[in-house]
Amino acid sequence: MQNYVSVTEYGQLHGLTTGYIRRLISNGRIPAVKIGTQWAIPADTPRPEDMRVKSGQYKNWRKPKNEESQIPAP
Image (cartoon, rainbow, N blue to C red; front, side, top):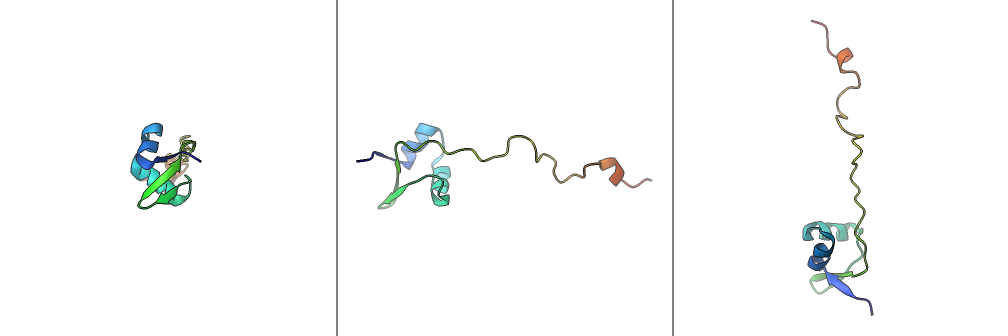
């Protein structure tokens, strides 16, 4: 039989909030089973991968590439 942990226990193990874990479950990124009104997560489930872009590639993406050429002369 497989061991399961609650959403709160999983959050304490991996340093995540319960709301974030429930969002990951609803998006299908964490496998879980609903038992009554509670979610049960397999104990051996690893921490989900962080999908944020941290390279700074999208920093100031709305600004034109060459700001000086876009400003009209007085």
